[in-house]
Amino acid sequence: MARTVPERDAACAIAQAAAVIGDWWSLLLVRETARGHHRFDVLLEELGISRKVLTERLAQLVEAGVLEKVPYQHNPVRHEYRLTERGRGLLPVLLSMQDWADRWVLGDGSLSGTADETSAEAHRVASLVGERLPHLRLPRHVDGTPSDPVAEGAAATVLFTYPATGRPSPLPDGWASIPGTVGCTLENRLFREKYDDFRAAGAQVHGVSTQRPDEQRVFAVEEGLPFPLLSDVDLRLSAALRLPVFRAGQALRLKRAVLVLDRTRTVRHVRFPVLDIPGAVREALETARNLAADPGPTR
Image (cartoon, rainbow, N blue to C red; front, side):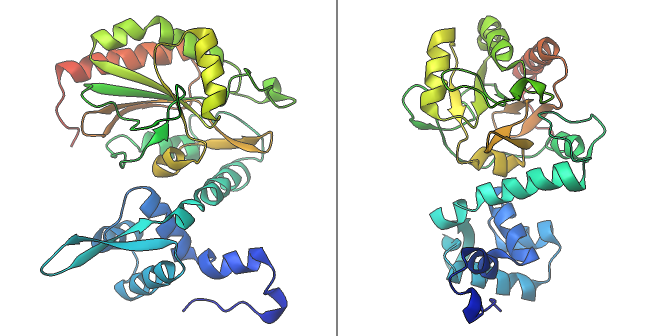
């Protein structure tokens, strides 16, 4: 049953939030629906939860307006569960929890824009190979138009995530001292230099950061980038793939990673951490060429 907030905490927003999503299973249900798992049996399998508990938690989240039931079959009617706008407002909370645990529980407490190759964080990202990106849309730098991160008609889509560029907004104090933050401009330039090769391979390139589209626009124009930059300012892509993030300047930033997806939205290649930026660009191009030659499924 949903928790009742004591009268002494009635005006406490933290207590009110905990009453709605403070339960282990409720938080994980928000995580799974953000990952594109919407149907009862799929959620049952992903979470290893009992049918009774799952039914109760879904009903609570629907009642709280975090999830909505959407029919996907008639005769008999069957529903799937999707995040509402209120539910999507919880994505920064989930990513903040992920960042906290990666740093303080699974890590040594160091602030970092990268990770050790043997870390739990790196293992989680590596396990994305074979996963499918759910349908979602991110605003483009050009005009803020919501766009699919997976390019329609392309044999491969390269998504490279990066923390931030220093134009037009200044970077936080101490930015260069955080491991993994330096090199965002270089990475964009290297993908720019190889863009014709990617297009010749039937691939599209998308850069992704949590900066606003207007910030990305200034940088893209100054650098003459031929490919779109997508803004994950609402963390929808980050939550869908549980991408690695870190907090700097009171904002969550994406750590540098390179992913290559095929036509079916399946992740076929991942590089994280990115310790050699030129090498990661060459590797992504080689993967794109291989996908164009052999577009078959991974599994």
